Image (cartoon, rainbow, N blue to C red; front, side, top):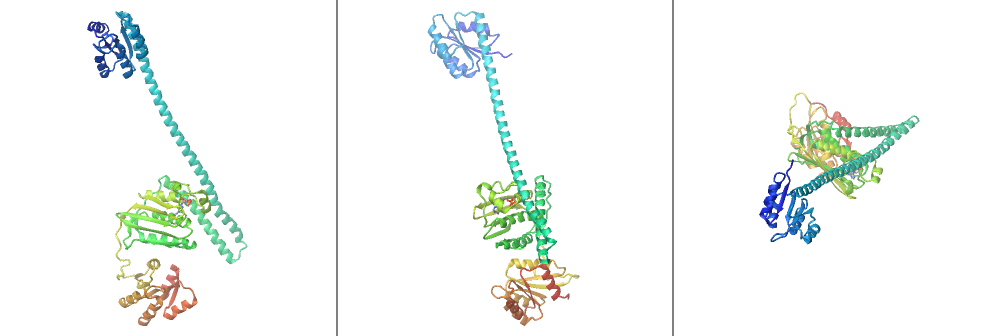
Length: 526
Ligand code: ADP
């Protein structure tokens, strides 16, 4: 059992000795000949009971016990005093809150009992304090648990609210195309040819919308449960972005918006990356940018820097409120209610974007000013891939078993050029493609490259237009077929193109079928 520590202060050494001899077996005894000495011991040792004689030179017993109460309130205090010290006893009780007083000369058994009582109370108080502390700790733990439960409850309620909202949205989003499908399929039976075509197109569009909803829901659940593997392949970023451009340019034009693409400045844009995921990221952001923009433009593009692709999608649309910025990336969450109602959607697009970006090890950020527009910026790490040297080099390459042509495209708009270039590259023949950015350059090419098989000639170009260039080329090289590329559709303009010497014309926007037909018509294998 623990031996309690008792301090006894008395200016008479003989008293101290007797005390030590009497109680040393039961307790650890400390003695001091003055209050000052007693204070030193109190400061150094953990004392469980303090006894002090009242009459001492220097500090009195009451003052010493008062000091002990103030600095070390836990151990009980006992005053040892002569019979006549009534005033001192009163002070000791009132000011030093003593446990008891003992009159000198003390009786051994009585003192022992008093000491035992004082220590028992002390022990009980110690235990009480410990229990109080444990209770306090338990209370704190409970309060913390309570807080956690509250947060969990709020989260569950929030997720419930989001789910309900999502189901309502989904029901609305499904109902709209469903109505169109059901309604127009009924009309089909009695429709004339013209109407039938229109109705079938509406039904097809609505079915595509339905499919998209299902695909989005499946996609997000696969992404969230981490079931989507990353498949890295060699990708030409310029081509990938261009394909997105061609697809969304049609959507932008429907809303009278300009769509701009900023590609890598040179052709070095081959990287190893998961193309499907990159396409998904871009298409969702572009779709939103066009959806939430009524005037102005949408611009997107990328830059390759230090093994990272930096993508941006910028619009001059309605912008996003400060308080919505952190929530719109969450599943099923949309911005403002009114906006969501007007534009439809399930609130999955940005969640799909964010999950895909993170799957590719990247980060997404958003800057937006309400009423002015938004910029989404994405950074994804990727390794550069070697460039193919054959493409676009303008150098002739020998292919023994493929037919070889040399086609010149005179076109000042880079994207229009790239579109035709892409269509030509898909042909089975080996085609060397040359690019002139104005009429004068087209003439220069004809002089330099003697064996040009065909020219696609844009009519509206800076410096020298297509009409003038065609006249000059036809004068010097009448054998080269020149096909006008034109956005002009008036009969007068087309006639002046033919008068300038063009053999045929293709109206913009060009499609692959038309280009194929022209090639098949004007080029015979050599
Ligand atoms: P959805 O478009 O189906 O509602 P998204 O997850 O794609 O879902 O977008 C979430 C919300 O973010 C949208 O409801 C819209 O309020 C806001 N938002 C997304 N992109 C834009 C943008 N480019 N401009 C303005 N608001 C946007």
